[in-house]
Length: 352
Length: 231
Figure 1: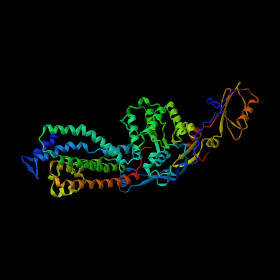
Figure 2: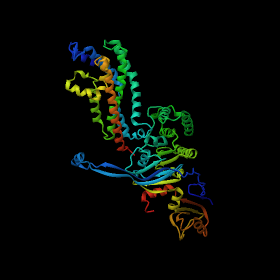
Figure 3: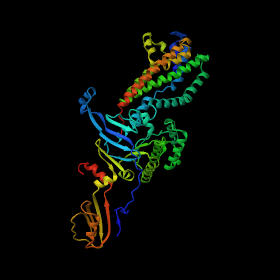
Figure 4: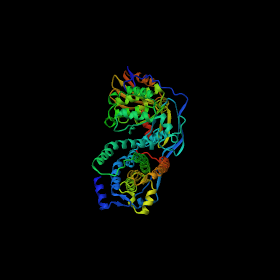
């Protein structure tokens, strides 16, 4: 009898060790809000002409009174459905946008007041944009950044060598950015954001449109960087498996408000109580009575049983099944972060 | 350039002197205006607007250097490129084929060059201030047209300012635009006397100071209102 988790992996998984955050708060966001005024021109010509003289506005609360503290060396998965306010938060953290209310401190600096100082200590990558110079060879873009960020020559060389090696990009350094593939350009953008050794890195959907292999390399790279340099990372993405792999702590924002801020383990513990047991018997099953657990699917000699971990342990359930029948194979599916977060997106946090 | 040359010869209609300026001075003014024209920035409005519309301006304003400096050095680079590809060949062509009233004095030439550098700053600052309006309004066609027509006429790029009616001329002479083309070119052709050169430099420097403060104020207010396009 083999016990697997339904994907062919053993149930006992050795968790990766993460860089433990020190006690210093790197990013402090308190009661932060950002409202946008959007013009409401109305319908029909008369309303539209009227709007030219007396504009009507609707206030959109892109970020609405959020607070979180992030310690040095943490990797945060910053999640939320489209239009939840993720990118707006990143733009507030980089100082591009002025907040409507509240305070932001990034390593002691208020970004929107001291954009310049803040620029030296953060690296930003937007998956849908590129900071590289479109017509220049990649290496030239790096050199411009070296001059712009006043990076000392030796530090620049070391960093470049380290990053190029890690990202395996020797082959296309001399090609103009416009000729690069998406994955190559993305790697270029990541290197560009890290040349000045920022202690903080914001990644806004960095794996968007990337193939599985490149994506895994990218995630591994982020992890390595965090291990080796203690870089604090905020990662926003729609790809929940990315977050599952590298972010010990998850913050979920929806409609401008933070609805969840907790560690992965705690989220799994709190929300992931449903399990699915898949049992294959030697012979066909006819009638079966379960006091705790629900049969959700049945096929000749195979059963799918959903149960709540708090009500019955998987061991007890299996034991009760084995009493009368011979069991051939068993696998248990746990809920993962992906399925939990999907449910939270769909139903909202209150219904959980 | 040849079109402008013959147009002006026709306008002089056989006269040698008009408004106290000889035909040779005017022709030299006009041809040299064509030579220096490519050196001045005039494409910041569409460039900045493109960055704003795509949203990529968020990289530019989060750099450790001021956005105006970033644009300034980009502009200097472009102007240098155009110096070698347009201005220099044209200048050589003029020297080889035309009779001009170019000065021989080193003093005048160096005064011209200093004044030209100052005009570059003025042209840049005017273009930069105009381009910032793109942060307010997304459709910048009107601003662009307004700015281009104003600088073309008021800078004296195509029409030397001395032929304007006196009242109009008075106004134009205190505006910053004329410091772009008119000042260096008038120094070059001798319309501005050697003794007046220091006060002309002063005029240019004062406008640089005024425009610089204006652009900083404008930038600060505009950036507060910024809404980055697209996600």
